[in-house]
Length: 71
Image 1: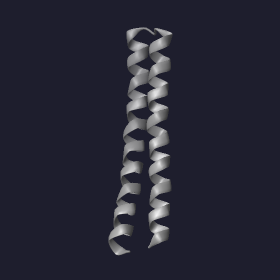
Image 2 (image 1 turned 180 degrees about the vertical axis):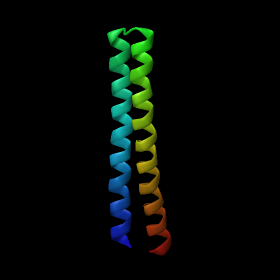
Image 3 (image 1 turned 45 degrees about the horizontal axis):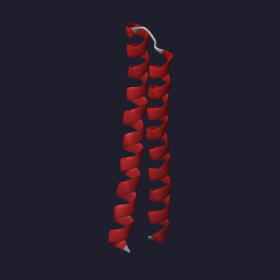
């Protein structure tokens, strides 16, 4: 079960990297000073990536918890 913990931790880190990427993307978009419609379109894409990254991170954390319980 130790392998499940390490795999879950790696998956959680991938999800965390995606969330950090979303933050960086939004910060870049704000610095560019885009028009409202363009900014809204860009943020809608980032929301999709953000939710996906959050889901991946949650799955990884669930794997870690299951690995700890079964160990």
